Length: 357
Image (cartoon, rainbow, N blue to C red):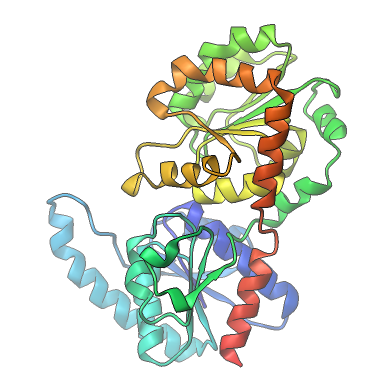
């Protein structure tokens, strides 16, 4: 059984491990458990796996009536978790963070079923910190995670990556550019702000379009749905504007430089891709963990950090400097590729099998 959800950062690693497990043990049964009404209830079936939703809700970090109802949701979710465990009889349970995972993994621990958790970020989430005392192994993607978890349980596996992203390593840069309608020999910048887009990044790209035109570079610009209609007018031969990119392997394959948010999975994917990257962390996340993710790379000269509040005024200059300084861009690309963990899903499956044995 696999549990985790709320955001793509919890769901996609879980799906990646399920895909790897199924590849190794095709006769196995896998059951996902998520939170009712959350995105995992759509994304997991889209990936071909069965999921059951619990009525669990998250703790609101402000005074609200919903927090008074939380004990009721927790008790209902625990009862349902025990029922699911009794009927499905899993050999191992893996949790990937988010409050959706807490009732199931706690119930599994009570029943003596081995549990493994995976933490994607450099700052551990609340659910994983609570569950760590019962976990057999804790899979992490960053150094110094002993500040959150028992050191003897830590295994540095990295974050599991979707299969289609791994395919980007096999793409011919020129051929993929042609598939976008771009010129093969011309430098290309990929701009990604997450599945919903990022308003700050979009405004920053708008502001630096004249500078990019002067540099004679091309742009693949994923805007997100909120700004898509407004920014569609910028589409041209050298600027490809799209609300959402389904085939990320083709976007990564076409890129020479990347501008991105600094979510944990995005950072892990960027390490696999191995291109020079500028990170603009979102300030609207718990404990400012995207900045912590970015700084873990910046300390190793594996990325350039531009603060969200300064992006509109600074991104154009930073991009220009990076494009003009080939030795620095090559160094960043090399340093970030050294951090890649392409076998994370396989390593986590191996740990799960070891616990069963």
